[in-house]
Amino acid sequence: MTAQYLQQITSFQPTKISLPSSKSESNRVLIIDALTEGENTITNLAEARDTQTMIRLLKQNPAIFDVLDAGTTMRFLTAYAAVTNQHKVMTGTPRMCERPIGILVDALRHIGAEIHYMNKEGFPPLAIHGMAEQLNDQVSIRGDVSSQYISAMLMIAPLLPKGLEITLEGKVGSRTYIEMTLQLMKQFGINYTWEDTRIKIPNQSYQPTAFSVESDWSGASYWFSLLACADKGELFLEGLKENSLQGDSAIVEIMDKLGVKSEFKSGGVKLTKQKVKGLASWDFTHCPDLAQTVAVTCAIIGQKSVFTGLESLRIKETDRIYALQQELASFNAELVEGENEAFTLIPSVQMPHEVRIHTYDDHRMAMAFMPLMTKTNVFIEDPEVVNKSYPSFWKHVALIDARRKTQEPRR
Image (tube, rainbow, N blue to C red; front, side, top):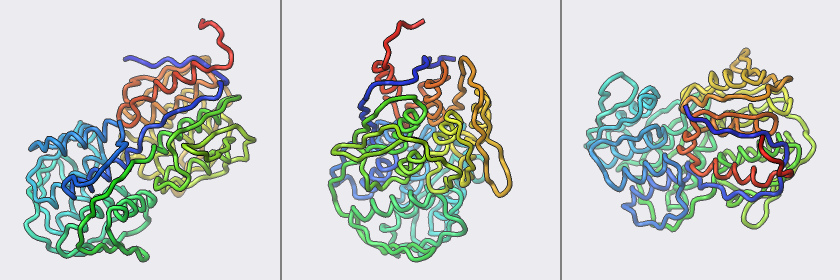
């Protein structure tokens, strides 16, 4: 298997990183654009493979929507195909067909969509046969599994003749992603109410709008982590907004406790080193995609911490809890499961001369472990996996290497 070799580098000169656009925003506005029949002006769409897959499928409109490994694309296009009365087969990679979709299918069936499982109940591939009429204008959806099911239903709600009222059941995870969906819909002219556990969206039309996608806070998190782990350095991350729709902007608050100061400037945010304040615990319920980044950071800098809100990590591109536990162990750190779904991060006390990281077909595993290069030599297996969300990642890592403080010859 090919591997990306990262030579140890403890410090670096000030570096500017032009971050990719947000995959989360891009995929949502693409569905909204499709629901308005492409009457919008959308700019700065993400280069991520997930987004490019969405663009290709919407443009070509094949009989089979093969989403590859894109979970968001699978869920959003399933709802889109149903509400637009299309006949589609929804499928993807073997791993994609192991990721549950039953909650979304049940919700779509409840309001009148005809959908059949082609293999295992509750999982892709699916056969969608459209939606002849709306049977119900109210639906209940669990909030503790995936916010993408909820976002998929929200975006199609305005097109339903009777509108839709969604009741969120139980604990609501990734709430910030639901808020992002609603705020984006609002920017395209949609009115809604959200009271307690009920979100109500009347029948109405999306309004043609000009929209530019923001840079990606999830992608930014790896650079925060790199600076937290380095002895010295400075970074400027382009394209980030202080008042972001993205829940992963929580990385600013987290990394403030782990030694990174953020200053918002014209065009982005400047990152500098500061004293570590300490992160005794963090609840990742509303920002689960940051969990790997923060776990690795704490493991490297010697910060013991307790993490909660990791439940959804088991149904991502891989079982991310298992993957983290395995790879943290490669440099003598641990993620120990305790009571009430709390996990204790026990940092490394002895760093090996070199570390090899297995990525489990998960883009975030490859990127989250990159900052290990501040302490040892690192081999990242299957580096191309980053193409799912951040194709230019390794080019940007090379910028850091080119600006190392001491340009000593490579051994």
